[in-house]
Length: 490
Figure (cartoon, rainbow, N blue to C red):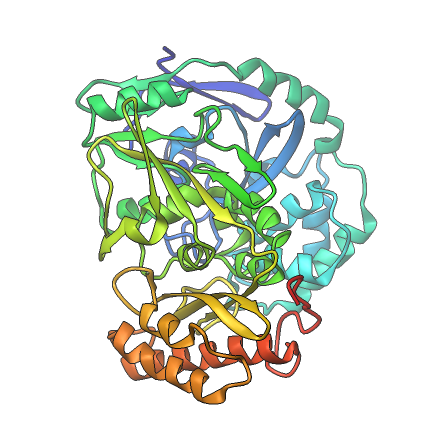
């Protein structure tokens, strides 16, 4: 048992043995270390002003990841190197990303600039080529109200094209060695039985800890729990972080299924899912920001039970099975049965999600569409996922799931029944399925969309999916995104 968290900061090992479980990395940086270059803007991981970079060893490689320090718990940096904007300049010289921002006038008021610099630094350190899509994706989680994005994007292209050697490249081997020395298989427990931050190292230790403390808050990426702290001011006296649990981040694939461990980051899940279907890849590209995808996890997105989480409807349409564990007991259930009511799931005290298994869409027709006010980094008003098994032009099985249409991610069973046995050329069957959605959902009006808007959009997304599948022509129905998509089943 280790009673401290350990991480690298400015080349040295930092050990912290006393801290409140709810302490965020941003508060530690600004209030304890007094590194005030990192700013607090929205306090919810949306504006990116608080962006810092964590470098971790992944399969022996040093991998940089931008994260939102405002909603990342301090304990989550255990075993990593923490880099902030203060660390970039060396020996009186700006980092190439900083120099490019100066030369292209990429900063005005400067409040957002540290976060933007760190997002571009992560891109630079990852060795990315100056590709516009990569640059805009990297900046999707950083908002700027003064400068506008053109000079910032120009600075990114300039820095990436120069590809100058910087001190961080020279120190990679040294940092990797230090991080390897920090790696251990010890369970981390900081605090007392009444108030603690714990990071078990094995699934068995996690299961025992959850049984002993069923009232503890389980944290994977903290992209949701972090807002409980910053917005709801939740105390959270007991926190169990899943990020050190060996094996919980495994990805397994066989001929027909893929199993994603609960702590697989959304950034890695994107690569896996994009290989199954291009719509899944595009859905994950628009899943929050790069900072959110670096921290958020598959299991966290499912277990928080959000009715507007983008991943659950897609997984439900793909016939996903959820795996859970409580003590030594294991069980599995269809993912759609896990969601009972708004923020209420079929998860018993002391039970936790271990993995989700989905059927590959190969041989079937899959579509997924997200509708939101902003194209990037926005919560869905409506998200629809459609998976059809078709033989000789006839629908043998239809699985249709929506997010944003009810208090839970939910299947449209009446619409599915209306399509069963229908032919794709039958326009009347399509309209019967669209009409049947009224029996599946009674959406609410909120600040994202009215109930009437949601009903109309849900129907139009179903029409769009069926039209694309029937005609094999995506370009006719897509104004933006991947017009060149051709699905493998077609």
